[in-house]
Length: 320
Image (tube, rainbow, N blue to C red; front, side):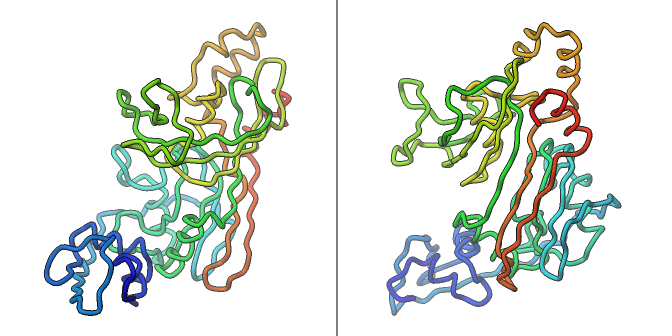
């Protein structure tokens, strides 16, 4: 531990066990070095006196919700489930007691709590209107093991989406720094330089934004100008796929935030146009999820097809 950064050194403490938890404690002012607030970058000296003040677990105000869950796998450590479109993953403004977390609390008493956070069991998330695969941690050991795989990009995630438009290239990598849109708080956007070009170079760090990387492959397109994409994530930022596809002129079908009705309104086939205007949800689905089980070290891979009603619509468009 001597000579290491403080956050890394603390990750070996049995009651902490991870760098992310160490960073949390430091940023909350709960770690002191020689009786002074500590910085994560502090290099540990042999003479340092390090004090750690663990927060008291906060009583949860979350209420169990009797909602049926589509569970694909469950053991003593984790749950893999298929989240439906329209279900918020964890409590947020406007959704306090009707989320996946509330349904999980009704399903089981075993969920990782970390330091009393209000998102028990949640390792990663999907947008409300995105369907597909999620893994849930039942204990802190599993939570940290899964979170480490997400951080180190050793897990496997594949999404499928329908875009309004056809990309100039059939495959590629979309990368940028994502943050809240400067004028529309519902949106996220990529950071731009002084010439209003999106910053694609990870070495040019803007003042705001988190690095996001999406790999895409065009699987099929149709005469109406719709594209069917396979997408693989290196990072999992909020609205990442939605922003990146919109920025190449292929906003996702059914996306009320990033897409425009202009493309659909230009379709001459009235029946097709009406069908698309009434498309019930965001055409984005988390179809594959793979990871190593933190306890057994077994390699697990799960696949989940589109919901039947959406699959029928995509087949009618000639995209499946």
